[in-house]
Length: 558
Image (cartoon, rainbow, N blue to C red):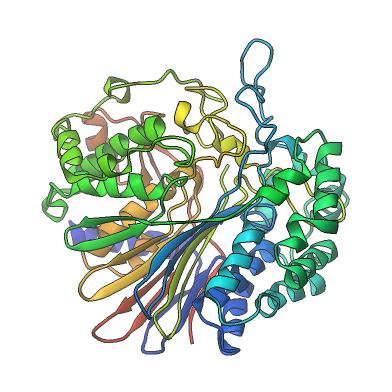
């Protein structure tokens, strides 16, 4: 069965996907990112004497320029850091925050119903950006080079322009009507309100100037002064609620990562306001009671889906910004708690989601982020997942700045039980509050056993956590990054109550078998995720890197 599975995976993905995989090498520095130019930017800084943290600044800023559908100065993210000299690990929380004027009813009509797309499109959907502050902090506290030096590649890409790729064009098409509604966004990203032709060059002069302000003045180059005034004036003119105080008050937070263990493997992942680490470790704790390698493929997928169901259920009810709500982190990642959840899993029958305790009423109502992984020759490592939420965020560019704003306010719960743009539900823990960080699914992660250490993560909205979960399970079975990235993916997120799987990612036998157990299944219309991964073998000193073949990234060792 395992041999047939591997053969199927190889044949399927060779036919469907194009990507770059870099094999094992003894050289010491590795970068995997979602865009070739971003990977090159990181190496440019390493070659100038920078470390992994300087390179992370360069890659983050470069992605803000060359992959605006996924991240940007108008967004935020999480940077998971490991410092080799002393083993210190931390998570830089550069997540966006709700404006001070935000409140729970801001996206509801007079009848208390959610106003369609108000939390997704336009200036009112944007949280206060955290990425610029995070870049300054990362450079000043952990880098060896100046911020100005690390930002140079991004400034150059914005000023000189670059050739857009097919993925960029597809995502423009997806958000075309909304981009057309904002003259600034349309003038930058569209060609007479149409998707630019293939091989078109995207230049972003205003964004280059904003990056220069950040390089010269640090925090004050974005959160006060000329750039800040332009941001506020443009947002408020378009119906947004930002103030100068919102920008001046923004601060990043360093948080202790969430740490767990699965079959002798140490898991280090994102802490709240990301749900990623908790949900990942909770699901792995549930699965630790099974010998997955001994199960047939149908039973294996059934058990993994049931673990996902329970972990995502807890996400909906307990998780939010831990600065505002009491998140029971240690209970949720406790092995005894997982053992209790495990007793409710039947091998012969799926558990209906509405039978789990504390079910919420659901009403139905995207997909973009980016990730990169870095390991330098000293062993410093960074896993960073960045986002503007939907492709091209709010599709709103603040006039004179080139800054494309996020629509992360949609990651809050606009109304209890109502799905957000990714089909996720939640309750009071993730309700909108002034100055609060919205819950995220971003899951930058380190995994380590006696012989290997890996750095990984992916975009993918609500499916991020399940993708990282599957990669950890493959790591546990001895597979390398190429296998994690090429394997077809499946997902369960509690609500909607179904297993979603990639196009062609399940055999007819698996579909029939899971259906007989009571699962509802749905094949996605597209292949999802864009994982970037690095693995280091401690014994052989070899690095293996991979960039997801579903995207257009580059994984490189130098």
